[in-house]
Length: 237
Image (cartoon, rainbow, N blue to C red; front, side):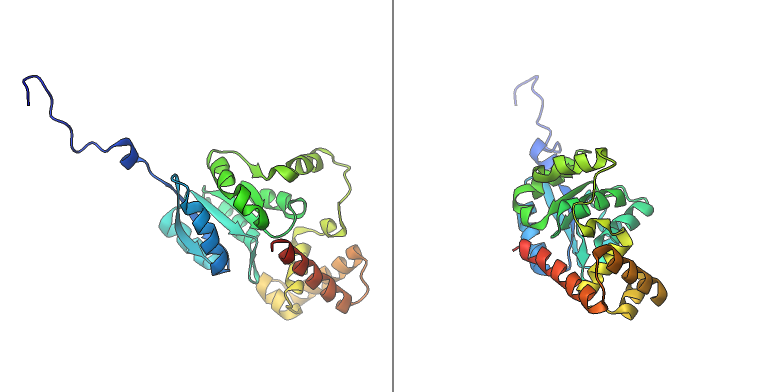
Protein backbone atom coordinates (compact mmCIF):
# COMPACT_ATOMS: atom_id res chain seq x y z
CA UNK A 1 0.00 0.00 0.00
CA UNK A 2 1.39 3.39 -1.01
CA UNK A 3 2.12 6.12 1.52
CA UNK A 4 -0.84 8.34 2.19
CA UNK A 5 -3.38 5.72 1.11
CA UNK A 6 -6.00 4.50 3.55
CA UNK A 7 -6.77 0.84 4.00
CA UNK A 8 -10.29 -0.12 2.92
CA UNK A 9 -12.78 -0.38 5.74
CA UNK A 10 -13.69 -4.06 5.60
CA UNK A 11 -16.26 -3.63 8.34
CA UNK A 12 -18.29 -1.14 6.34
CA UNK A 13 -21.21 -2.91 4.64
CA UNK A 14 -22.03 -2.23 1.03
CA UNK A 15 -25.28 -0.36 0.28
CA UNK A 16 -26.88 -3.58 -0.92
CA UNK A 17 -25.97 -5.57 2.19
CA UNK A 18 -27.18 -2.84 4.56
CA UNK A 19 -30.62 -2.65 2.95
CA UNK A 20 -33.33 -4.22 5.10
CA UNK A 21 -36.24 -5.87 3.37
CA UNK A 22 -39.59 -4.83 4.84
CA UNK A 23 -41.26 -7.67 6.72
CA UNK A 24 -44.77 -8.79 5.76
CA UNK A 25 -47.09 -11.09 7.73
CA UNK A 26 -49.60 -13.18 5.76
CA UNK A 27 -52.90 -14.05 7.44
CA UNK A 28 -55.17 -16.46 5.54
CA UNK A 29 -56.74 -19.73 6.61
CA UNK A 30 -55.86 -21.44 3.30
CA UNK A 31 -52.20 -22.58 3.05
CA UNK A 32 -52.39 -22.68 -0.75
CA UNK A 33 -53.45 -19.03 -0.85
CA UNK A 34 -50.65 -18.07 1.53
CA UNK A 35 -48.17 -19.91 -0.67
CA UNK A 36 -49.33 -17.99 -3.73
CA UNK A 37 -49.16 -14.63 -1.97
CA UNK A 38 -45.74 -15.46 -0.53
CA UNK A 39 -44.52 -16.23 -4.04
CA UNK A 40 -45.65 -12.82 -5.29
CA UNK A 41 -44.10 -10.98 -2.36
CA UNK A 42 -40.87 -12.97 -2.52
CA UNK A 43 -40.15 -11.67 -6.02
CA UNK A 44 -39.87 -8.12 -4.73
CA UNK A 45 -36.31 -7.28 -3.60
CA UNK A 46 -37.61 -4.87 -0.96
CA UNK A 47 -40.09 -7.23 0.72
CA UNK A 48 -40.02 -10.57 2.53
CA UNK A 49 -42.61 -12.76 4.24
CA UNK A 50 -41.57 -13.00 7.89
CA UNK A 51 -44.43 -15.22 9.08
CA UNK A 52 -47.72 -16.82 8.11
CA UNK A 53 -50.87 -17.35 10.18
CA UNK A 54 -54.20 -19.05 9.68
CA UNK A 55 -56.15 -17.61 12.61
CA UNK A 56 -56.42 -14.52 14.79
CA UNK A 57 -54.53 -16.21 17.63
CA UNK A 58 -51.67 -17.24 15.35
CA UNK A 59 -51.57 -13.77 13.81
CA UNK A 60 -51.34 -11.98 17.17
CA UNK A 61 -48.51 -14.29 18.22
CA UNK A 62 -46.65 -13.61 14.97
CA UNK A 63 -47.05 -9.86 15.39
CA UNK A 64 -45.57 -10.00 18.88
CA UNK A 65 -42.67 -12.25 17.85
CA UNK A 66 -41.79 -10.93 14.38
CA UNK A 67 -42.79 -7.24 14.58
CA UNK A 68 -43.75 -7.07 10.89
CA UNK A 69 -43.87 -3.79 9.00
CA UNK A 70 -47.12 -4.80 7.30
CA UNK A 71 -49.79 -7.49 7.40
CA UNK A 72 -51.91 -8.84 4.57
CA UNK A 73 -55.14 -10.10 6.16
CA UNK A 74 -57.99 -12.05 4.56
CA UNK A 75 -61.43 -11.01 5.78
CA UNK A 76 -62.67 -14.61 5.96
CA UNK A 77 -60.58 -16.67 8.38
CA UNK A 78 -62.76 -19.75 8.58
CA UNK A 79 -65.40 -18.89 11.16
CA UNK A 80 -63.38 -15.85 12.28
CA UNK A 81 -63.53 -12.35 10.83
CA UNK A 82 -60.34 -10.68 9.65
CA UNK A 83 -61.78 -7.28 10.50
CA UNK A 84 -61.88 -8.35 14.15
CA UNK A 85 -58.13 -8.93 13.88
CA UNK A 86 -57.66 -5.49 12.33
CA UNK A 87 -59.64 -3.86 15.13
CA UNK A 88 -57.72 -5.78 17.80
CA UNK A 89 -54.36 -4.79 16.34
CA UNK A 90 -55.38 -1.14 16.38
CA UNK A 91 -56.93 -1.34 19.86
CA UNK A 92 -53.71 -2.83 21.24
CA UNK A 93 -51.66 -0.07 19.64
CA UNK A 94 -49.80 -2.00 16.95
CA UNK A 95 -48.63 0.43 14.28
CA UNK A 96 -47.95 -1.97 11.42
CA UNK A 97 -49.59 -1.18 8.09
CA UNK A 98 -52.56 -3.39 7.20
CA UNK A 99 -53.83 -4.51 3.80
CA UNK A 100 -57.14 -6.40 3.73
CA UNK A 101 -57.93 -9.04 1.11
CA UNK A 102 -61.45 -10.20 0.30
CA UNK A 103 -63.36 -12.13 -2.32
CA UNK A 104 -66.20 -9.61 -2.01
CA UNK A 105 -66.73 -6.29 -3.78
CA UNK A 106 -64.80 -3.31 -2.40
CA UNK A 107 -67.98 -1.25 -2.27
CA UNK A 108 -69.26 -3.66 0.38
CA UNK A 109 -66.13 -4.29 2.46
CA UNK A 110 -63.72 -1.55 1.38
CA UNK A 111 -65.06 1.21 3.61
CA UNK A 112 -65.75 -1.23 6.44
CA UNK A 113 -62.12 -2.33 6.30
CA UNK A 114 -60.80 1.24 6.37
CA UNK A 115 -63.12 2.11 9.26
CA UNK A 116 -61.74 -0.87 11.19
CA UNK A 117 -58.23 0.53 10.86
CA UNK A 118 -56.89 -1.03 7.65
CA UNK A 119 -54.71 1.03 5.33
CA UNK A 120 -55.79 -0.62 2.11
CA UNK A 121 -58.07 -3.13 0.47
CA UNK A 122 -57.59 -5.48 -2.50
CA UNK A 123 -59.96 -8.07 -3.92
CA UNK A 124 -58.38 -11.53 -4.10
CA UNK A 125 -58.78 -11.93 -7.84
CA UNK A 126 -56.87 -8.65 -8.29
CA UNK A 127 -53.96 -9.68 -6.05
CA UNK A 128 -51.66 -10.55 -8.95
CA UNK A 129 -52.11 -7.07 -10.41
CA UNK A 130 -52.17 -4.91 -7.29
CA UNK A 131 -50.73 -6.72 -4.25
CA UNK A 132 -47.13 -5.48 -4.47
CA UNK A 133 -48.17 -1.95 -5.44
CA UNK A 134 -50.64 -1.91 -2.54
CA UNK A 135 -48.06 -3.07 0.01
CA UNK A 136 -45.54 -0.45 -1.07
CA UNK A 137 -48.21 2.24 -1.04
CA UNK A 138 -49.40 1.52 2.50
CA UNK A 139 -45.80 1.20 3.72
CA UNK A 140 -45.30 4.68 2.31
CA UNK A 141 -48.04 6.01 4.55
CA UNK A 142 -50.79 6.15 1.95
CA UNK A 143 -54.14 4.38 1.58
CA UNK A 144 -54.70 1.90 -1.24
CA UNK A 145 -57.85 0.74 -3.01
CA UNK A 146 -57.64 -0.68 -6.52
CA UNK A 147 -58.16 1.83 -9.36
CA UNK A 148 -61.34 0.23 -10.79
CA UNK A 149 -63.33 1.18 -7.70
CA UNK A 150 -61.45 4.05 -6.07
CA UNK A 151 -63.68 6.67 -7.69
CA UNK A 152 -66.80 4.80 -6.55
CA UNK A 153 -65.54 4.62 -2.98
CA UNK A 154 -64.65 8.30 -2.89
CA UNK A 155 -68.03 9.17 -4.35
CA UNK A 156 -69.87 7.13 -1.74
CA UNK A 157 -67.96 8.89 1.05
CA UNK A 158 -68.57 12.40 -0.28
CA UNK A 159 -72.22 11.88 -1.18
CA UNK A 160 -74.06 11.57 2.11
CA UNK A 161 -77.34 10.93 0.31
CA UNK A 162 -76.01 8.09 -1.79
CA UNK A 163 -78.28 5.07 -1.74
CA UNK A 164 -76.86 1.60 -1.00
CA UNK A 165 -75.81 -0.17 -4.20
CA UNK A 166 -77.48 -3.37 -2.98
CA UNK A 167 -79.60 -4.59 -0.09
CA UNK A 168 -76.48 -6.17 1.43
CA UNK A 169 -74.99 -2.68 1.83
CA UNK A 170 -77.81 -1.83 4.23
CA UNK A 171 -76.56 -4.35 6.80
CA UNK A 172 -74.52 -3.12 9.74
CA UNK A 173 -71.04 -4.56 10.26
CA UNK A 174 -72.33 -7.01 12.87
CA UNK A 175 -75.34 -8.00 10.77
CA UNK A 176 -73.04 -8.64 7.83
CA UNK A 177 -70.82 -10.85 9.97
CA UNK A 178 -73.85 -12.85 11.18
CA UNK A 179 -75.03 -13.10 7.57
CA UNK A 180 -71.62 -14.41 6.49
CA UNK A 181 -71.56 -17.02 9.24
CA UNK A 182 -75.07 -18.14 8.30
CA UNK A 183 -73.74 -18.62 4.79
CA UNK A 184 -70.99 -20.92 6.09
CA UNK A 185 -73.67 -23.18 7.58
CA UNK A 186 -73.47 -22.17 11.24
CA UNK A 187 -76.63 -22.18 13.34
CA UNK A 188 -77.66 -19.73 16.04
CA UNK A 189 -75.79 -21.47 18.88
CA UNK A 190 -72.48 -21.64 17.05
CA UNK A 191 -72.78 -18.06 15.82
CA UNK A 192 -73.47 -16.88 19.37
CA UNK A 193 -70.42 -18.78 20.63
CA UNK A 194 -68.20 -17.52 17.81
CA UNK A 195 -69.16 -13.87 18.27
CA UNK A 196 -69.44 -14.04 22.07
CA UNK A 197 -73.03 -12.80 22.06
CA UNK A 198 -76.30 -14.27 23.33
CA UNK A 199 -78.68 -16.47 21.34
CA UNK A 200 -81.29 -13.72 21.65
CA UNK A 201 -78.93 -11.18 20.09
CA UNK A 202 -78.24 -13.53 17.17
CA UNK A 203 -81.98 -14.02 16.68
CA UNK A 204 -82.45 -10.24 16.66
CA UNK A 205 -79.76 -9.86 14.03
CA UNK A 206 -81.35 -12.61 11.93
CA UNK A 207 -84.72 -10.89 12.13
CA UNK A 208 -83.29 -7.53 11.07
CA UNK A 209 -81.32 -9.12 8.24
CA UNK A 210 -84.48 -10.76 6.90
CA UNK A 211 -86.32 -7.44 7.08
CA UNK A 212 -83.59 -5.55 5.24
CA UNK A 213 -83.22 -8.23 2.55
CA UNK A 214 -86.95 -8.80 2.12
CA UNK A 215 -86.81 -12.44 3.21
CA UNK A 216 -89.66 -14.22 4.94
CA UNK A 217 -88.30 -17.47 6.36
CA UNK A 218 -85.18 -18.87 7.98
CA UNK A 219 -84.72 -21.18 5.00
CA UNK A 220 -84.72 -18.24 2.60
CA UNK A 221 -82.13 -16.53 4.78
CA UNK A 222 -79.84 -19.57 4.77
CA UNK A 223 -80.14 -20.04 1.01
CA UNK A 224 -79.56 -16.35 0.33
CA UNK A 225 -76.51 -16.20 2.61
CA UNK A 226 -74.98 -19.36 1.15
CA UNK A 227 -75.59 -18.12 -2.39
CA UNK A 228 -73.98 -14.74 -1.63
CA UNK A 229 -70.94 -16.41 -0.09
CA UNK A 230 -70.62 -18.87 -2.98
CA UNK A 231 -70.93 -16.07 -5.56
CA UNK A 232 -68.07 -14.20 -3.96
CA UNK A 233 -65.84 -17.29 -3.98
CA UNK A 234 -66.71 -18.01 -7.60
CA UNK A 235 -65.62 -14.51 -8.63
CA UNK A 236 -62.17 -15.15 -7.19
CA UNK A 237 -61.82 -18.13 -9.51
